[in-house]
Image (spheres, rainbow, N blue to C red):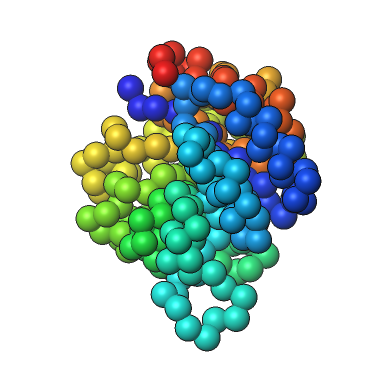
Length: 253
Ligand code: PGA
């Protein structure tokens, strides 16, 4: 059975005192029988690393440059993230696709840049409400994932995928477990066709995951955990989601 993974996406939230309090609480609730990580704003990566170093909690960033290095003002490279101990980088989050015009091709290059430095890309895919209502959900997520699969080629099995329907992000409107499972199954079949190793790959669900809906989502056969936005900022809520993941996995430490 695949081990569950819960990744907090702090987005542009946090402050030094608030982060310290949140991380101390998450650390204090160990051990977890699921893998747990937080993806924090770039400026907080180092202090997050300092707090979490030596624990089994992991950390990461919310974006990464497609470039190795050079005159790219404001960008942060995968090598820099690796140097700061980042295990993960979110790539292609819908907010970046929407507000920073990130194309499928750019997202694929970012995923490749991350992987080349040993940082696991968490590749986000998902349809808008308009696309879902037009019956395009499958076509959209397959197109988004296919760009990354082709770019990563023989390394494609190394990525983590996150299915995040845009209409469920930050809206309080979660995909039903059946809706989410249906898309996850499509993505896993696509990954299997491309890599032959999809049974080892993690596909997370994201979009208004909370303590009270996490267990049923994580119980779906193709949902391997969650990418958690708003609820990852509240210690009790985030810890409860991590517990739901370990119950779904049914494992022991
Ligand atoms: P949400 O965000 O949990 O606040 O809906 C999820 C995400 O955007 O990763």
